[in-house]
Every structure is written in structure tokens, then in C-alpha cells.
View 1 (tube, helix red, strand yellow):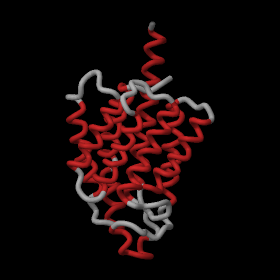
View 2: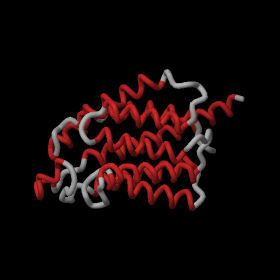
View 3: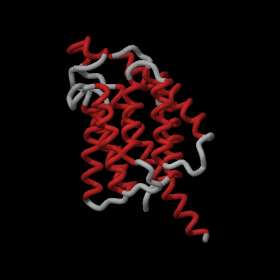
View 4: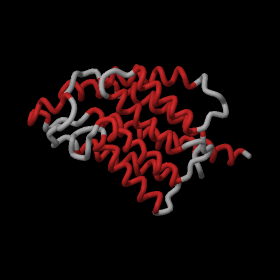
Length: 223
């Protein structure tokens, strides 16, 4: 089963919900090693994204919808997270192009391009204690799942699970980028908030795919 604009719209809704639900936790993570506004900034950004979603054309492609997410985050989210996450979405949307349906290879391409966008914007690499530590294992897992013949929803779930593990892996790291880098060894023991929010957003993408599949199954059963 391929993914289409129904999935993309649900992804946006799920992402906005999960950011709102985890706002306080993200604020607390960022307070430990940053300036404490990560959760608030992301909630503001995704609230703006949700508001714009209703005005998108019915025939908007997944790529167009996710490009809207990118430009909205870049223009509304303060700090480093807006440009970083916005660029990730922008490059990911570009990988989807004008396709109306996304297969497993397309999902893997989206995740990889998003990771590359974060790297391009932040000049970070694995081990720097940034969102790249979530996006890179997600990229590897998505590619492996797609190459192994998994359906798009399973590819997203593999990416989300790997991102969650990647976010957890930032806890023992010394930050080499961003405000946390000024803390040196004091950042050890704290999870990077950008990696955590990235993992949550990828989980929202996977949950959205499951929602679409469940709805399709219910409709088929009623027919």
C-alpha cells in the first residue's frame, strides 16, 4: 500500500498533536542543556502548520504539503530548531517531488533527504549530540527496510524506532554543536532535545501511516 496526500495530511496533524503533548518534556530537556524554549518554539511552529493545513488545495501532493510544513517552520520557529527542522522537511519534500503516491523507496528517500538537510544546515555529524543522531539511524533503517521489501508504513516504523534509539544514544555524549557545546562534560547524561523531537515527529509519520491503513481496512470491511 503506497502513501498519498491523505497520509501527509494525517502526518501533519499527528506531528502537531505529539509536539503539543510533549511540549513540557521538550522544554525540560532543553532547560538542562539549552535555553529551555525548544518545546514552546516547536508547538508554536506546528500550531501555525496546522492552521495552514486546512487551506491547502485538495489536490496538493505529499511533497507540496510537506514543503508547506518546511516554510512555515522556518518562518515561525525561533532558535536553531526552526531552520534545522524546516530545512529537513524542505529537502525531504524535494525528494518526493510531484509524486501523488509514495512507495517504500520514496519513503526511504524522504528520510535520507531530510537527514541531509539537517546536516547541510547544521554542519553536524553523528556523535555531535544533535538531531542528526536521530535522523541518521532513521535513514539507515528506512533504507534497509525498503531494500528488504517492507511496505511504506513498515519503512516509516523502522525509521521511527531507529530515531528513538538514536535520540536515547545522545545521553552519554558531549555536545559538539549548538548551545549545549558550551557545557562540555556537563551535557553528559542529558538527552538532546532536537534528537528527541525529531524522533517524535518520525513516530508521528509512522502513526499516520498506521491510521491510514486502519481506515482503509475498515472501509474495505464495510464494503
